[in-house]
Amino acid sequence: LAAAAFVVKVRQWLKFVGVDPDGRLGRGLVMAGNSFVVVSACQSMITSMIRVYAGQLSRQGYLMPLWDDISSRRLSTWYECHLSQGTLAFRDQDFLNLFVR
Image (cartoon, helix red, strand yellow):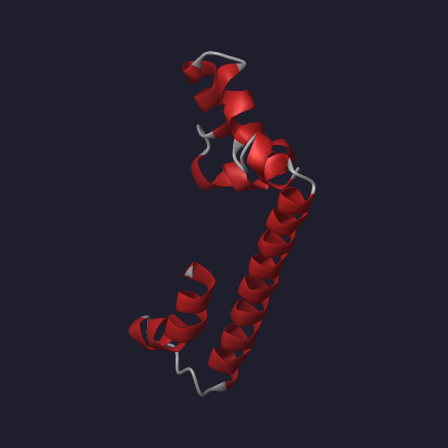
């Protein structure tokens, strides 16, 4: 749903920040952004489907790797490891692996 909202609204968001969505830069940003979001959404869907067919979703749930990581240490330690850097945490491969195992 978030991916669909991005694809539908990205042109309006570009207008809001002052970029012409019909210009060269705007078309490039729309195409690159839409491609990235759609590929990410498909990857998430495929990962979820694999977990469902493997039976892991019904036994453990999709967020079980994240819950295991949280419960393995104190919350202050978990925060320091993963979230203390804000959005830079998404560059941490170990953190991302929690969602795509």
